[in-house]
Image (cartoon, rainbow, N blue to C red):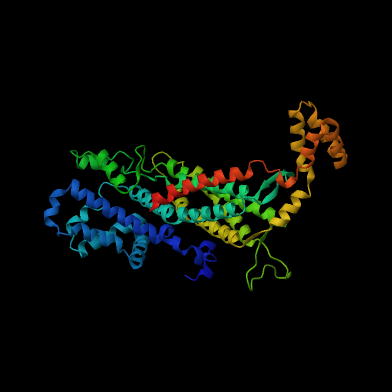
Length: 464
């Protein structure tokens, strides 16, 4: 398919940046993962339930089954889609092809046992959970780790860069740009650790979750233990409270975690954008880039804006999915199936947003001198310090005195200080500069970055 003819920009405009995600979210990826689940189940069934069949099988029958799953090609997937047109059922089409392959590879004796006792949702839920797990570990978490590294480095670099803090959009008191970045790095790191440690669920239960067909056909087998051990062998968490479907509760938790993360990242983009609009940050323009079709002077934070939009769309989509997919009519309905096929849209947008945010941060120029000048240009930020200091000395109406004085001009504030303070105390406050009124900002930033480093080491150690 030509990307220019794609309906959704994920497969069109952004294909070159997100193509690696097709191995988790494409139709081919789902078909191939279903095949792996079917064949893994067949191996366990033969080994634990139909052991008498082993003597009639080739010595390396397990390896052959693995090869069938691993080497399922795009051409095989196309054949399955053709079969689906006739059969009207995607899993049934896969089973037809797998049976043919079993005969082709000399394993025809196993053909009756492929998918025995299962419902399509036994296969689908396990395939989707395994694909989500691999996406999480191989694509999302590494991208977030890279972002944490970059944010932490920038926070440390600018740990003492004084900037004007704003509340309600207007000057408040000074802080540091390093502390601002370190706070975001800490929040993102905490969420990344939760996302990294998430265990995806799985179920095996048959038509309505009771393993009825398998229990009837093989009454001497402990099917509950079989189901649990099979699911855990696939690296998933066994979920026992099922109908025909795996209740979406746990995966909804995962989607909601990503939705919250996306909202935090979107807020970071907006904060950086506002600092850019104030002229305190510049997101450089590369050689030959054009940021306006009419204004040659423009250098716009386009990567930030693109990331913000991606994060917002991802967060809304994931929130909807997380809520909607919890609902399932009685033992089964198909309204969830089409929604699950769109997992890749918001999760790909999340990865795209992270990449664009990192691109913006990598070209970000911090105008420390302008930040400092802005802080020094707002002496009123010291009124908080003044009123608290006066109250410490017992002046009960210090807040009201300073509030009235500041409305009448800075000279009036000085008069209030002179009238209520002895000379030694007045000199201490008069010598205070806005740029030195940053409290514990640097210390907080360092402490946050230390904790980020600890989280980073835990996550990366677990991945290695």
